[in-house]
Image (cartoon, rainbow, N blue to C red; front, side, top):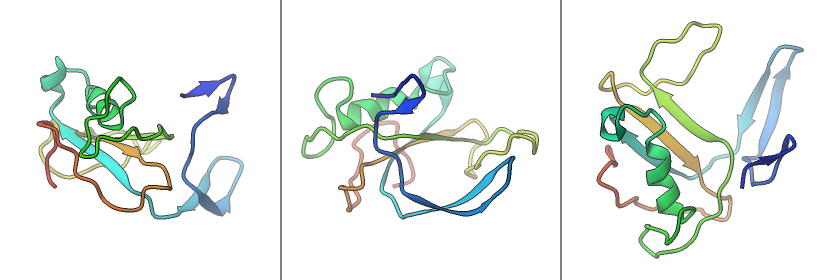
Amino acid sequence: MGMVFGKICVETPKFEVVQSTDEYEIRKYSPSVVAEVTYDPSQFKGDKDGGFTVLANYIGALGNPQNTKPEKIAMTAPVITKSSEKIAMTAPVVTKTGEEKMVTMQFILPSSIRRRRRCRSRWTRGW
C-alpha cells in the first residue's frame, strides 16, 4: 500500500489530459465511487486527518472491514481531503460548503466497485 521509491503501487483513477503546460495539467477523470466521511477535527483531538482511520476501517486496511458485507476493499490513490479553510490561490483546494470547522475526506474506491455503499460510521454526515 502506498508508494515505493516514487512508484504508486495501488490503483489510481483513469483520466484524460485535456490541457498541459510545463506548470500544470487539466485532467478529465472517469466517474468514480468514493467512501466519504465528514467530521469536525476536534472529534480527533484536532487532527484534520482523523477521518483516515474511519475510512481505513471501512475498507479493512486496519483489520476487519467495517462495511455492510463485510468485505475487504483495496486501497487506491489519492486520498482526497476537503476543508473549508481559505488557502491562497497559489495552492487551491476543493472546498465543501458547510460548517467552517468541518473536514471531508474521501477514498476513491477501486474501479471494480460500481454501486454506492453506505458507510456505517458515527462520523458520517450528509448521506
